[in-house]
Length: 217
Image 1 (cartoon, helix red, strand yellow):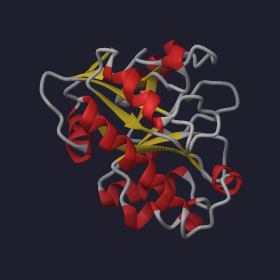
Image 2 (cartoon, helix red, strand yellow):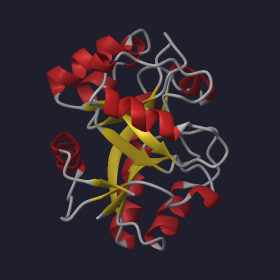
Image 3 (tube, rainbow, N blue to C red):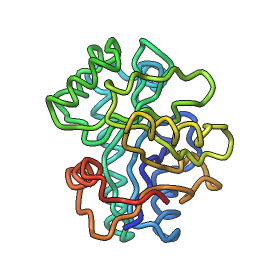
């Protein structure tokens, strides 16, 4: 399977241009077999969209479920993720397998450090990767606070310094991942991972990432 690990839709990512339906349709025609919906998940977006603590996560999940249903109709696998930013830094973290019982408590989540989130990741079994760690305005997260880093971010409007990210991952033995960071039509299907087997759901994707049984594309 070819899977894009970093995809946004306009309903929950305010910088997104493509709707969920447009995104699913574009990927279904792109040659990719799956996408992870990693919409922005942070207090600024929550406030801008007018959600309180109780209903923001519910709305986020509904957006994903809509993408998953559309994907089933189009023959595209859709997996659950988010691009998390807490209030303690400008860093973005790609999260895969986020459990409802942790991520629905947004008021607590916004006050957490990367080490706090990594501790929860170890406890609950989800994964946290720093997105585009060498892009402007990012701070490099200590390797011990991460499951890995994004070594190829293909967004054409940013310099993510992927070469440095790849060297950093190699230096600290950090697993590397890749994604298109898709926000609009020109971003569709630019990067991701490839497996030799079918990945049926989000839990299986987490297992794939943990095992390292994939190739960067």
